[in-house]
Amino acid sequence: MNLDFTPEEQAFREEVRAFIDANYPKHLKDGGMREDLPREDFVAWHKVLGEKGWSVPAWPTEYGGTGWTPTQRYIWSEENARVNALMPLPFGVAMVGPVIYTFGNEEQKAKHLPGIRDGSVWWCQGYSEPGAGSDLASLKTTAVRDGDHYVINGQKTWTTLAQHADWGFFLCRTDPDAAKPQEGISFILVDMKTPGVEVKPIKLLDGTHEVNETWLTDVRVPVENLVGVENMGWTYAKFLLAHERSGIAGVARSKRGVEKLRDIAAKEELYGEPLINDFDFARKVSQLEIDLAALEITELRTLAGEQAGKGPGPESSILKIKGTEIQQRLTELTLEAVGSYGAPYYLEAANDEGSNEYPIGPDYAAHSAETYFNMRKTSIYGGSNEIQRNIITKMILGL
Image (cartoon, rainbow, N blue to C red; front, side, top):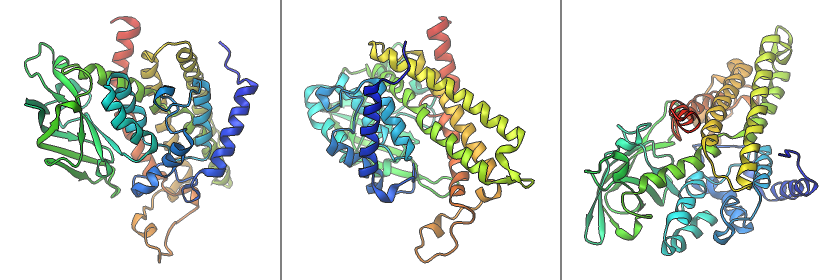
């Protein structure tokens, strides 16, 4: 396996970098992921990429994909990470889109894929419930057939950014008498404007509104919104989660984060010396870089396998575990580096155009505490890391 970039791939990197530098929205430069952004900012880059034909690079070309190799897609992620670009949200592009073009019918593909590609339709995910998170198969939301419709009743939770969503994809129990819990679940698309759908905010400790409770009360959904075969939704859900977990690893962004961490540690001081010169802090940064380099090689090996026609297997769980652990360590070290500057939280002042109070400390300290706390979730969503270890044990060791 050759992990070096070819001259053609290097030329591709230069093309991508030039396009990003020329077209990425100026007002979003180095803003990264911010849950308090308005909807139009979330989709601004997505719409630019949609016009270019680059919004869904991993999709098959017949559905609007770029035809890039896995290595080119990796370069694409690196170059976007270089400017901390706000990428297209995964719910449509990386989650429901692949499910629809793999298992959906032609009508569903024609109706839903164009809006995902161009960024005009926002999707949310209806998986977790108050009593069904890691044990997703115990979900209670029901979809009962009534003529040409399903009538859905239940509650979903942690529905990320559902306050902006046009459509959602929901796992619902359609056969309560199935021999196994996994065998009675269906994958159903729901227009979020349908009567009976209610999205209630879950306010986080920092005051932001990222996640929600979604209540479904006698929601009537046309039968044609069922994806694939009734009671086969668990198969589609596992397919979706395997793709989601690979993307959660975030190697390119973590590499960029380590670069920024080193810059911060060179500016901050400890006992009159740059923090990066402190042996203990430098050791922690170096160990992080070593682990990140190993993760990058693992991701490149996985990409090489995909290029050879091998789909995601236990590698997606390995990438998810190590990737999220590295992300958490990175945000922890960043918060340690900025010290007391990480403490102030000035969301209201930041949104007040007349305020002269924001920020306290250097710009690189802004949002460091917020990011640290927010990133605690990464080892839980997409299937908790404990569950991923069970999957690896089962798939590799056969236990």
